[in-house]
Image (tube, rainbow, N blue to C red; front, side, top):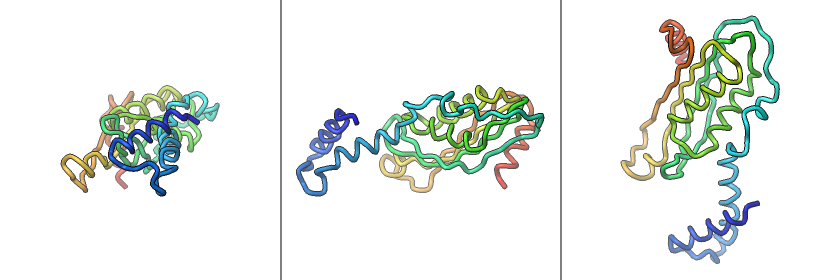
Length: 184
């Protein structure tokens, strides 16, 4: 437990003019610190520990897609949440990754401060690094609370990002197949 975080959350609450001694706020600095540690736990994880050998020999070269992986992240500009879904596809090159590991990779990178474009790229590069795939595609759609709660106050706007690596970048038909399959 990082008591520094407790202290800093207490200072934030005081800074907005609230009374940290008020009944509803007495334990809020500690709760907020624990929540923030959880929301940023991706910094404490490594790709190799996360994958933990869950790679399996396979002679399949058919596209593997994991769709609708929900994620929750924090934007690095305002530290407000952005919430969305990821679609991850890859073409195996002798090895496939355990299914749950794709979702865990998305979670690991999502639980860091960043922008959506970086999150999309980090996930794609991690899947490529781990699997040695012939190609990797990642597409993400998210709603950003920094846009919904402040600034332009746009409730229904959604941001879309994609990263195509290897054969998804070089082959239009591979890319089109992925885009068609994720829109089912």
